[in-house]
Length: 190
Image (cartoon, rainbow, N blue to C red):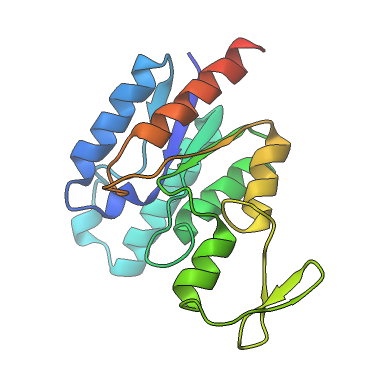
């Protein structure tokens, strides 16, 4: 049974344990052994904040080392892009040459989120394939779901990046199920 590391910002939700349990159950339903971040960390009550953070980071890295692949929740989190910790996990797994599967609970691409949300619809300047915001900064306009490095890593790993609009982006499992289906299909072909 292939081991999947379930990356994403769900650990920050007030009902994190329930959401992660649901994701783990779905992963098992699709034939994978789930590895999820979070959970109890023995001795956490006696550690300082920095040392506790190190315990969590080391635990996540150990699970990623053990995993065969990742499914990452790259739904925008606290802004226009994915959770930075989850992006690190995608890069960590890519660096190991493992397949990357991801999902987002919005179908709006990176360019739309930057231009509509960050720049609030302000006028953009275009010169050929280059688009700049009113502050002169270049905006990636590549029809990709997130920063081009994230999409490139997923694509080049052989994985896929699934998307669906969700009324509750923090908890909806539609795009996650699509990523599970893509991963199951990918592994079945190996």
